[in-house]
Image 1 (cartoon, rainbow over the protein chains, first blue to last red):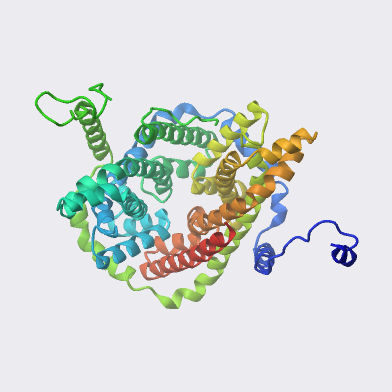
Image 2: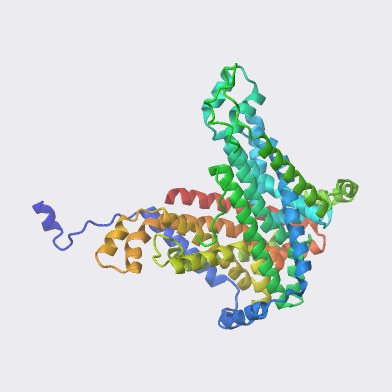
Amino acid sequence: MATSTTEQPRTSRPVKPTSRLRTTLWLLVSLIIVAAFWSVKIKWSSLADFPAQLVKYVSLMLLPPDWSQFGEAFNATILSVQMAWIGTVLGIIISFPLSFLASKGLAPRAVNAPLRFIFAVIRAVPEVVIAILILSVTGLTPFTGALALAVGSIGTLGKWGYEAFEGVDPGPKEAVRSTGGGTLALIRWGVWPSAAPDVFSFWLYRFEINVRASAILGLIGAGGIGKMLQDNVQFRNWDAVGMLLIVVIAVTMGIDQISGAVRNKLIHGRWRAPRLAS
Amino acid sequence: MSGAGAPGFMLAPGTARPIKPRRGTMTGAAVVLLAAITVWAGIGVQVDLPAIAANWRNATSNIVQLLQPDYGFFPKTVPALLETLQMAVIATAVGAAISLPLAFLASRATNPKPKLLAGVRFVMNMVRSVPDILYAAILVAVVGVGALSGIMALVLFNIGIIVKLVSESLDGEDLGAQEAALATGGSWPKANRVAMLPQILPSFASQVLYTFELNIRASTVIGLVGAGGLGILIDNVRSFFRYHELSLIILEILVLVLVLESASSWLRKKLV
C-alpha cells in the first residue's frame, strides 16, 4: 500500500482503461465525417434562409390544405394499398416454399446456400431500384408495381422465414422424426405449428413496409398516391401537396395500427393496437 | 377463442383423446376475408398475366442488355458515387447529433413530464410514417436540386429511426443510478446525463451504425427525385433506356451496400 501511494501521490482515482482499437476507430470515424463535410459540394449559405423557407412552404401546404381533390387522393391511396397487398400476397406465395428450402435441416445444403445468397442480394438492392429494373422490363402499370414489391418482399420474407423455421424448439421435430415422419410431416407437425405466429406477423410487417414502398413507387411512375404527389409537387400546388401528405400519413398510421393490433393478437393472443403516443 | 373447454383436460366420451379446441369458424372467416381483400385488390391493380406474357418478347432484349453492364461507364459514375457516400455520412452524423437529446425526451425512463413525452412520441411517429423519398421530393422543391435536400431528407429519416430505437433501449435500462442521482438533489437533465447516457452509449453507437447502413441504401435512390447521388444518374440513364449503364449502376449499389454493411456489422459486433 505504502509504495503505491508514494508512486502516485496526487490521484486517488484509478486510471481509466484505454483501448487502442477504440481510439483509432473514433479518430477514423471523425476523420471520415470531417472529410465528407469538407468535400461535399453544397452551398451552405442556402442553409441560412432554410428556416424561413420551411415556414413559408409549410404554411403554403397546411394553411389551409386544399381538400377539393380529396376524392381523387382517396382513390389513389386505395390503389397504392391494393398494390402493396397484391405485392405482399405474391411475395408470400413465392417466398413461403423457398424459405423452407433455405432452412438447414429441412433441405440439403446445396439448396440452402444459393437461396440464401439470392435473398441477400435482393435485400441489398433498394426496393425502388428493383422496381426500376422490373418496370424497365414490363412497363409501368399498377400491376407491375405490385410485382416489383413482390420481388422486393422475397428477400426479407425469405430470410425471416428460414430464421423462424430454424429457430423452433427441437422437441417436436425430434418427436416427428422418432415416429418415422418424413420431411413433409416434419414441416407440417414439427416446424410449422411453432413458427406460424412469427411467420404471420412477419407477413403483416412486410405489408406495412410495402404500403410505404408503394407510395414511393408512384414517384417513379407506377401510379397511386405517389404519382399524384409528384405531379402536384412539380406544378407547385402546395395546398394540394399538404392535403396529400395528410392523407399519406393518416393512411400509413392507420394501417400500422390495424396491422399492429392483428400482430398483437397473433403473438400475445390479445387484440391491442399499438398506442400512437407511447 | 371458442370456449370449447380448457384445452387438454376434457375427454370426449369413449375416446382417450382430448377434444380439439374448435376454432374452425374463426379461421374460416379469416380466410374468406383475406381472399376477398385479395380479389378486390387484384381487380384494383388490374392483375393481367397474359399481358405480361405478351410483353415478354419485347422484354427479353432489355433483359439481355441488363445482363451486360457497360464497365466503360464507370468513370462517369464516380462523382455521383462519392456524393452518395458524402450524403450518407453527413446525414448520419447530423441525424445522430439531433436524435440523442430527442431520444431522452421520448423515453418514459428519462422524461418525467407525461404531456411532453406524449407530444414528442406523437411527432416522432408522424416523422417516421413519411417515406424518405417523399421527404426528398418535397425538400427538392423547397431548397432546390442537389445534395443538400438529400441530406435533409435523410436526416429526417434518421431522426425517426434513431429516436425510436434509442428511446426503446432507454426504456429498458436499469434506473438505479438515475434514482441515486435524483436522490442526491440532481435535476432530471443532470441525472440523465451522468446516470443514463453512459449506459446507452454503446447501443446508441450501434444504432447509428445501423442507420448508416440504411442511409447508404436510401441515399442511392433519393436522387430519383433530384436529391443528389447515384439516383440522379439512375433517372438519367433510365429515361434514355440505356440499360447497359443502368445495370452497371445497380451493380455498384450492390457492391457498395454489401461491402459497407459487412464493415458496419463487424464494427457493431465489436461495440456491443
